[in-house]
Amino acid sequence: MMKLYSFAGAPNPRRVLIFAAEKSLQLDVVNVDLRGGETKRPEFLSKNPSGKIPVLELGDGTCIAETVAICRYLEALAPEPNLFGRDALETALVEAHHRHIEFELHSSIGAAWVNGPIVAAAGLVQPIEEQRLRGAGLTRKYYQRMDKELANRPFMAGERFTVADISALCMIDFAAAMVDLRPDDALQHLWAWHGRVSQRSSIRQS
Ligand SMILES: N[C@@H](CCC(=O)N[C@@H](CS)C(=O)NCC(=O)O)C(=O)O
Image (tube, rainbow, N blue to C red; front, top):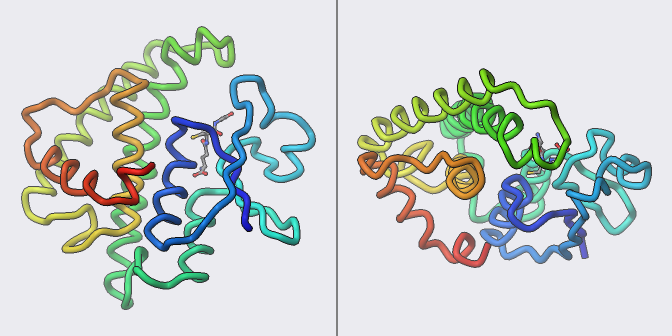
C-alpha cells in the first residue's frame, strides 16, 4: 500500500487525505514527529529535500513530495470522481482558482502562522510582527473576496466540487483553529459553502 507521511492537524497532508478518500484510495498513514524535527533529519530529507510533509511513498520506495503533485498522481491512478477538471476550459479554470488559493490565501495564512506565537514558542523562527499582521490582514481580505465569489457559484471553481475546494477548506480550518483567523460570521456565502463541503464524507472523516 502507498504510504503517506503526515501529521495530525497539518493542513497539507489533510488535503491529500481528503483527495484520496474522494477516490476511495487507501493510504497507509505514517505520522512523523514534526515538532521533534523528524522532517529535517537526513532520513526524511532523502524522501523530500524540502523537509516537509506530505510525502507519498510508493511500493518501490519512490517518493513524491508536494501536495498538488501527489494529488495529480492520485487523479491519474483513479480518474473518478474527477477533481482537476474534465475538459480544456474546466481544467484551466480549476487551475486558476486553485493557484489563487495557494499563492494568495495559503501564503497569507502561512505568513500569519510562521510569525505567530505558536511557532515562536517552539523556537523555530524569529517572528516578525509586521509580517504576521500583514498576513492576517491579507487573509481577512481574501475571505471577503471569497464571500463575494461564492455568492455567484456554489463551489470555489464553479458548479461542482474540485481540488480547489479541498485546498481552501483545509487552510481555512487550520487558520480558524491555529492562527486565530476564523472567518467572520457575517461572511454568509463563505459559511454556506463551508457547510456544504463539510458534509462530504471525505471531509467528515478527515
Ligand atoms: N508546498 C508544500 C507545503 C508543505 C508544508 O508546508 N507542509 C507543512 C505541514 S502542513 C510542513 O511540513 N511544515 C514543516 C516545515 O515547514 O518545516 C505542499 O503543498 O506540500
